[in-house]
Image 1 (cartoon, one colour):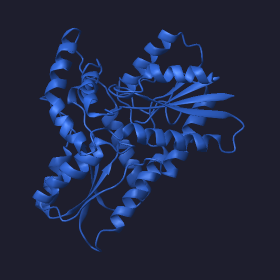
Image 2 (cartoon, helix red, strand yellow; image 1 turned 45 degrees about the horizontal axis):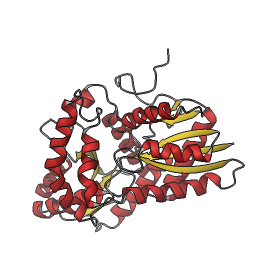
Image 3 (cartoon, one colour; image 1 turned 45 degrees about the vertical axis):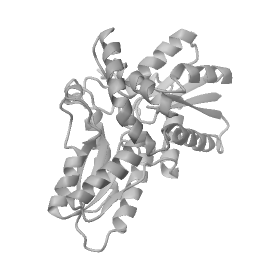
Image 4 (tube, one colour; image 1 turned 60 degrees about the vertical axis):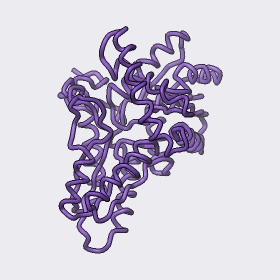
Length: 345
């Protein structure tokens, strides 16, 4: 049995000239801007033009491009090694990105060249949202239809409390806390990318799943400490879910306590971690008088995380389901109508 595993993520510009078209692709996604064409196309053109300069300054800190593709390729390589270790089956990992190369159709053509017996779609978003996993599922279906795909596909929708993911995050938090001076008062900020409130109000389970991840990490740490979920990267005039990470940073400064900031919904280093958290929010912390500001790494190629992904792939492939969660069953409560898994009668 040969299995192609497609790891996918947001993507990012690979050079300065790609910043504006990358932004256009992002905002032209109907799952991001839910307005009909041609108005979405026009608005995406406007937003990408206006934001290109600001985004260019952000990526300038990273050498003019996003490291996300390289980091994802490293994860794919690490996962492939683990999957093929001691296995009688053959796994090959591929990478697809939503808003920049390699696009879904490009990756599917590579997969078809491999001629696998089955395909597993593996999101590098542990928590489901219609704006991330849902969006990629939509374009995958379009690509599969375009190529007349006949190979069985199993799509993993989410794994917010996967033991490997949770253990890796918990280990980083524990290590960071251990570096604080003895007796120093601190708070852990579990920071995730935000969403407009109207998306969550429409039944998107993302915020709820983020909170489940945090609860699982806190339980794994098995110690009493001050913590809170918060959300970063707000753009535009809409009201976003909160509390805002930057507001929590200022609050910690006013209270005279230290911070351990944990990127709870990111699994790779990219602009939101390397620039927003490490540079922009650290500057806010300095101005607010935060005593110590620590940021834990993303899970990256941490062995616990990669082993967890390998188990998810094997279990999903063995289940033979069209759509699987990290537990094999529906993760979301009935409150979340946008959960892609059907409610069992």
